[in-house]
Length: 361
Picture 1: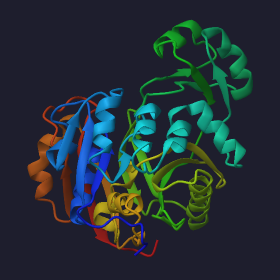
Picture 2 (picture 1 turned 90 degrees about the vertical axis):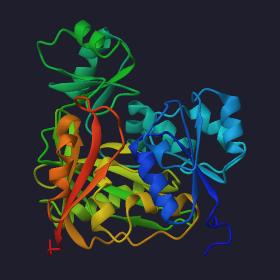
Picture 3 (picture 1 turned 60 degrees about the vertical axis):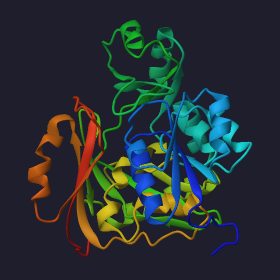
Picture 4 (picture 1 turned 30 degrees about the vertical axis):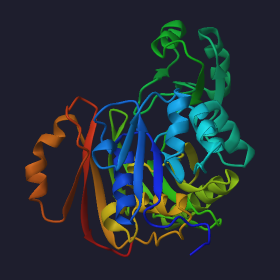
């Protein structure tokens, strides 16, 4: 064990109290760690399973400083935590991953530029600061294209499609007149993702690529193995490795891809955290993405990411969760619920992993 690795009973601080923080806290407890959640929402999913909770805005520097004094290392469960909050914590404790990947992932324009600098292909893109910029941007991207806010937005929020006859002013208003990018529309063959981790010592371990299905811009299912040619899966892993090393990253990173006819891959986006499309690892790999994140931020050796079963992960969105009792009775189905009080349309309430014996694919 590395000499600077955290001992069991050390405390891991987690910025964010959603379901990802919840599953990180559960994984930490299984390794003997304590967790302290920092979030602004009462009765958040992570708070239900953590040792301690600080309820305060991410802009409250005094609360952040006090929080830092109670923990041994910090991480974050979503990429919209203010960079300033991480800066406060870094004065007292290591934050893994740190500010650099957060800054890259929070701004879609900077993310695309970063990927281009390290030779990773993406959809064509152009900066848009006003409705009058859209026409010129479309000369770079071609149409149709997708107008996306540079920051914020997830699961289809903060974006709108641009066609030849789209009213540019109305489209810019639809995304809140926020700084944006225009991305060329990609006619992809499939969407896939790679969950990859890097330790404090630079070791890298990647899980098998997942093939992803979306409904209404929200991830619905991840298939592992999917209908992904082996050479394409290997290429995705190579690209993900280049990204995580260029970021000098510690922790788990999600990399989303568009797979094109003929086998080419474009990176759609990166997520500096555990990722929805990696939930399958809880029941079909020797180490889950959540345990892997805890191992990485604690300075432990990374776990074995090898898959031992075939699996389909399915999100329970909105009222899907009302069928929990039927799902619990399904053979080979592993139910994970997030403890959220209210089911709303589009809200992720839990997920299931349906496992089966591993095939040779």
